[in-house]
Length: 278
Image (cartoon, rainbow, N blue to C red; front, side):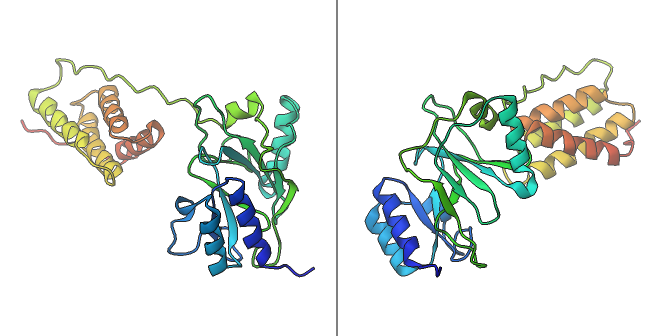
């Protein structure tokens, strides 16, 4: 059967009429067109939607996930073990209830779920809840039927009801929510065995790190870590104190604990003992 490009315009218009914010994707692809702002330009206005697909009738169709549309999606990709991972989760908990569902061109599934009403925020993640299981939440989007890829394979509705988003079971919702933040470390005070010179130099380096702006935080952490590691390897500064101070300040300027520890470890491995004045 020949695919009609006006089916895309019709589908986009119908979804907008139902109050869902949609936006065009590049023809034959599942990404926004070059030069566009993607999901940030999504609209539920039927007139806006009609105009967009009149201009590009073969544009694929994106649906925004998150609060704006009251939905989030679970993307199950069997190419990366998503079908097996989901079956194992259902076996360990319970079978998922029926909900809006699409099949993807590569044999996967998109399961649409109602956005939680208790203030919880679901964010985008890739394979965090299981291999081949991605979550599309706040700030994300999902490619919707009848979008078609360049090779002719299509997204299709398995179960379609814009008002039929089921509430995700508690166990799935718990997995989809972001993990709790790692507690920030509480560095110990510097003891009296450290010389005034080393203490002042370390304090100056740490103060400079605290003033670092976004975009160069990791580079600054690497440089300051390297400097303090030199004192540590020269026997002038306790290693646990130095690492604790570096980690605390790295987290305070916006780096994750995991990222901070990776950078600090790398700097400590590369550093050489620092020569001190007599």
